[in-house]
Image (cartoon, rainbow over all chains, first blue to last red; front, side):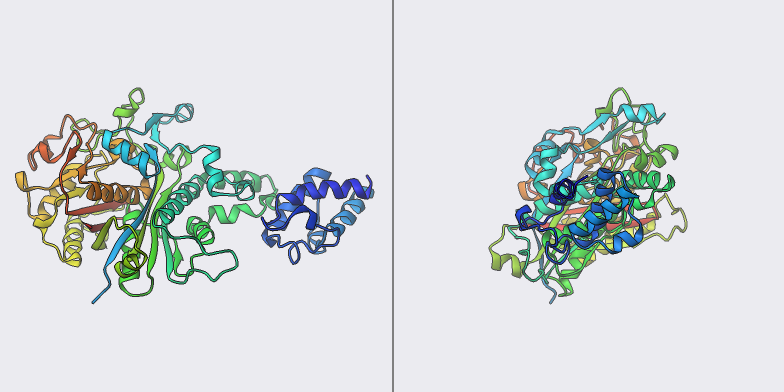
Length: 83
Length: 423
């Protein structure tokens, strides 16, 4: 799975959780999900559940802690898929 | 002198009408909201009828975003949000802007019995399967007791007290009295008061097991809820929400708000489950004292009461309630005020009942009518011994009402009575 295709799928997931005043165009690979995109931090767990379902993987607690940006998500997914 | 408190907004989500206009039409015409539910039959319920408000998916989206509705499974919170936000809008008050300060002088007391037993069930199944992490972020906020006030607080930007009270069938009436006291004590200017309850087999099952809901009308649901009737055979379970904006008269006048009615006062007490009082039965001494105390708090005389909105659930206790009103007011026979029970039309919506019935009381005060008591064409003989049948209108009547009393009595031997005055 290419980085581009993972990222595209992540964008679809993220879209649901963006506040009204943040558009998908504002989302960059290294945008901080809660600090910059203003996603409610409580929703990070929901995003992870969606990611797990989409990519058929499971995040460990440590993975959750290191998740700040979509780039982080991409690398976690690639690592899980490779192992 | 304590500030006068008025009602400037109403919202209602009732089995026989969602929104004040539809609800008003329904109560005037004696429209039932009780239906047969095949799910209850499948689950071997004795009582297979109930009352639930009809809410479309589009209606939900008027109040909540797609994100908020994701994994949302709480009818109680949904009903509370619709009623509460409708009341706020009706009062002409706007929620705080997103980046503005909270509305420091606006508080919320929005009660609930349960709001989300379905969400609990969903969560328990996920959890028992070893998937606790899959609960996500939605389980806590939808299952916590104060879920409904928390949701409303965020939607409105309320900055005063934001809380949920719970006292069984007294909840709604109690919330209004507590909000009234918050304003009279000078701690808030505007209070959104109300209550809600969810529905379905998991909420109603316990009552079915207690044999306090009727099993005799599964084929005739609209005839099932029969307050004050000789053939009453237990209550019919229901759900929904009612909401009222209480506001200091000073603030309402300053805003030029429409004033529906004034809250003159009220009382809340408990029979302590002593003497004939128990977890499930009322102590009549306490019931009467609650009514007398409410009159005293409102500074009105028993003879001033023109209309009573009863608790009257359609159980064997209805006659006792009428007797308690007679004793507390020291009025009987032709001297007794008009009385009715909304439960004939919508059943007993549990914690939501007090607030929905309070909304019906305010509408009758404002528009000078008494809605019809349905399903008591065969008045219970113990009741007709105490008061004449014309005080229990079976048809809609138009008559001026100046002062109304609304009472609720609940499990735990708790009571609440509130006095409203026409504006």
